[in-house]
Amino acid sequence: MAKVKGPLFSIDARGQIAKAMVFGGWKGIPWVREWFIPQNPSSDDQKAIRLIFTQAVDAWHYTVSGPQRILWQTAIDAKGIAQSGFNYHQSEYINSMRAGEVPAVTPPTY
Image (cartoon, rainbow, N blue to C red; front, top):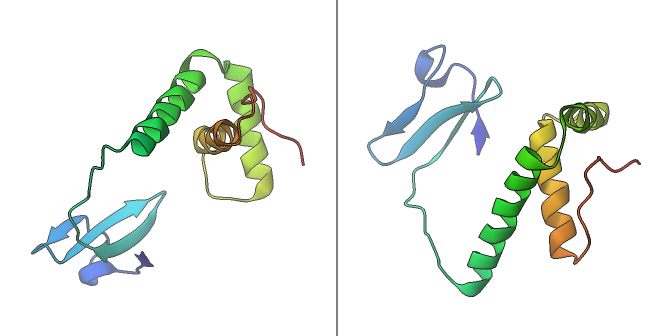
């Protein structure tokens, strides 16, 4: 995905153009990519991955407390990565589940 400055000679551009390009933004960073029709496979492997994603989101909403959420955000801020604490938690949770480990409620220490 390309990052752009002044897309289409404007301050901001969002949406698609003639099923050729899609413009958008993420955390204030404008981007552009080729338009495509997403696929939605329903294989057993894909269903398993979707279940893990669902469990990860449920864990964030029902298991991780407010102070723990602040720890996740602080941990990712310390790494200097443009990511939210929620996204960091999801990444760690999913990686733990795929490795057959028990996901942590608090962020890992490095």
